[in-house]
Length: 489
Image 1 (tube, helix red, strand yellow):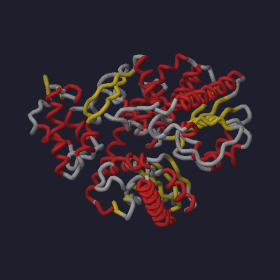
Image 2: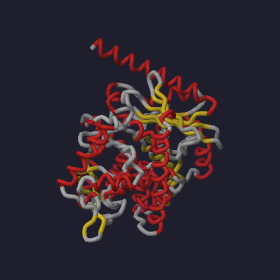
Image 3: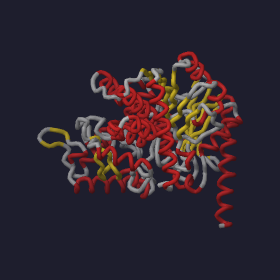
Image 4: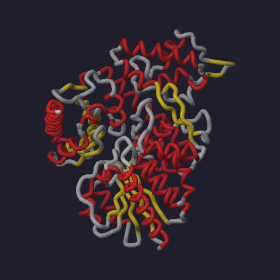
């Protein structure tokens, strides 16, 4: 974790944001929350919404897929001098745009992306990067929102589990054993203390709590298991070959029902199978076994019981243009919103599996360039799923030290939606993918940025090849510089 002084400064900044929010609420001001559409952004919005509800504040929440002139124009129209604007999980990467559009209005930014541009005096900006804390691994935006909400009211410790969900949704489980670490570890401890979370080590299957074993195996896409992921009948045949009882007393068994020996046999068989398909052993182990975050107050046999599944459900609502359902679920709705979200989750999962199968059958869509891989999604991969697909594909590339640049084409807007991923090892060595994407985007009349390991952009379609070539060149320059530093060291 970062040193104590920086940590204390960051915590103090969170308290200042809380004090400002409370001051404005007590004046009777309305609060306008704008957040990102992924699981972390929805979790952050849900945390702030629940905290403001308890503070008897007048507030509204809006979820957006990215920041642009249209969003800020709407913000100006929908808010006045009597409104406090809070950005969660967005804002840091668009400081210059905010400066040009927000004017002198008071703005609170709770974000963990790498800052781009300069702050203004009317911006109360809480971002771990400003304090030398790694925002891609140590804390996410929902974690920042949680710290602020905890200062608003100590009762809000019962929102810590939502920050855990957001961090897992942002793939911050990069510590040994697929655990959360850094500041997230403190938030996990709060969630355990509030008796809403338990952590154990187990196989990491989608649906470990909710689905029959063969369905859980078929729904597993990280790693993507060739000829098994998305294929229930083949998954069933694979399991029957392991002499594992799939039913007990006429009821399908879930992963949570298997004995330790059955889990060991299952892991060993999957490991050998994936090695035979060209997967690296260490990747298989880290993908299949790790920390499981169990939300003990949620009903067993539901997707909300496992924090990673909860995050996927939130991500699905955001990507499928139903983010309001995700916010409502974070704030406690377990009736109509939850039922609709389950339907959307199933549709989203099917879409991802369809595109992974399509890529498996069309391997030429993933090109290896000199320094990067390029996934040409074009119109064939829906832009709503390109982020999830790029995350899954990036973990099984033949040369893991080459970043993956994936894109989908949005014909209506004539832009490409870009999702870029880099291995944690090369990011820790010094490659900053977010900075590379930002520079390339700016040179191509687009916008982009993010983290060292994960970034995104929106680029006019006509600049597509120029954008990709610039990234390839910038990655080459960065790697050459890092190798030079190593040799001098």
